Length: 359
Image (cartoon, rainbow, N blue to C red; front, side, top):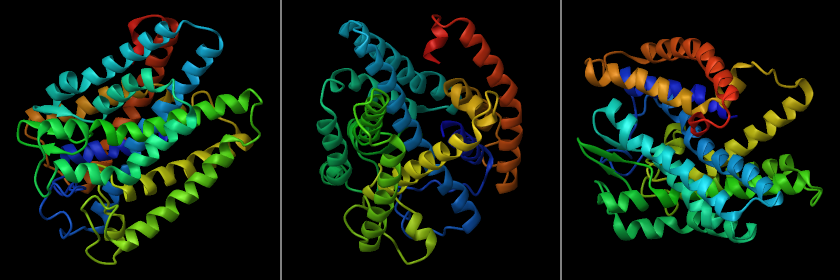
């Protein structure tokens, strides 16, 4: 699943770099966000990539829980576990204000910062029972718009501090679009799901992970349709302007609204369940494209992001192409990345205790 959304992510980042018609006003930050034209092909190219960030964050929580809960069962010292989480989270968080910002030509605080800080928060939060973690995550998804309204009056930016925690901020020199609390919520849910998978493997429950995914997926889509139809609270100030399919899907990502959470996490759960169902029947190739990409996620992210951003930022290619340029450059990047990711995977496996474990 991670490999699948990474393919989508390359399309989005290619569009951000080279497509003059790129659409990215998925937020009430922009005055015309609710009424702007949404050409079908450009809009769908952008919208299909909304699945990426929730998937990365949710699966980061799931994979972390699978690793940590197993270490807890083996009796590993609690501080050693916390230290590992904190170091890993700090390394990931620092990539945005350093490498990614250098490539983008301005201070960029986005998904890597959110994932890294979220991981660091899981060091203390992991001690809570699953019901409490789920309540905190779902509570924010439902009520977070109230807290956001206290510190942000769109359109326009909030303060940088408010953007780091709950809202969003943008200027010529700095961009903050992935605040901690809204993106910690799906990571916490991912942790709860990972903990559940450990219980399934240990014979502590008969409710399979796939069943949980099917139920959660359809529930998420039902919530989306009800809340989006109402066109009020739950849209994070980005309500439908009309009944077109573009307006139905034009939900707030920055920061995520209840409709964004419900739609994207619902789709994520259904995709995970479907992929699991498919894998049980046809298996998975060790060198399959999606698996290779999914197992080298950080390497993949850094290489392709810089390969797009540096020429766009420093060589005048920002917005120089169109939608065809987007898909062509994305395809060529994926072709080049496959052998590179296979090579990196082999190197990382040969040195499991090196600094490469953080990437």
